[in-house]
Amino acid sequence: MDSVFSYVSIAPVEVTAVLTYANNYLPGFLAGEAGVLSDRGFIVAIFLLGVFVFLNFLVIRFVALRTTVADQVMRDYVESLNAVPEAAP
Image (cartoon, rainbow, N blue to C red; front, side, top):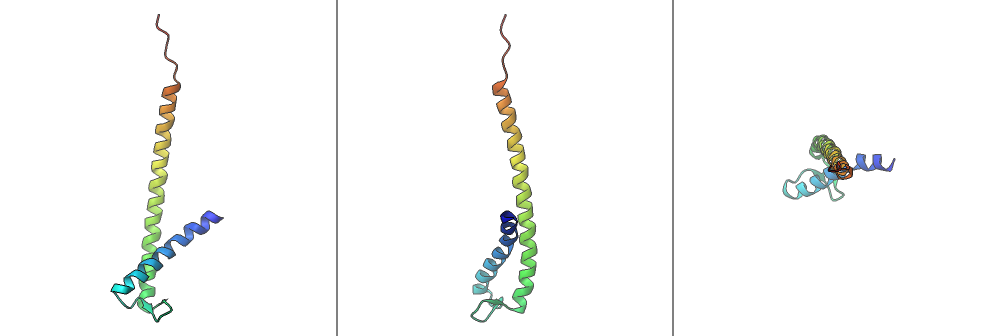
């Protein structure tokens, strides 16, 4: 359950960080001193949330694929080390 919560909370934190940083250079994403999203900021946040969810999904798939390949390579290597050579006549 904890891992699901962490996966779900990553993209909104990334969007908050990007919009807060971008607001310094492109004002209008945040309204007032409280840092609440403006209308434009809300629309951009929805778009960025979709982008970050998609990118995070791709990265997780990429890491899972690489882990699977590395695991197979390691198994093959260990099997080659454990192979008993035939005795010479």
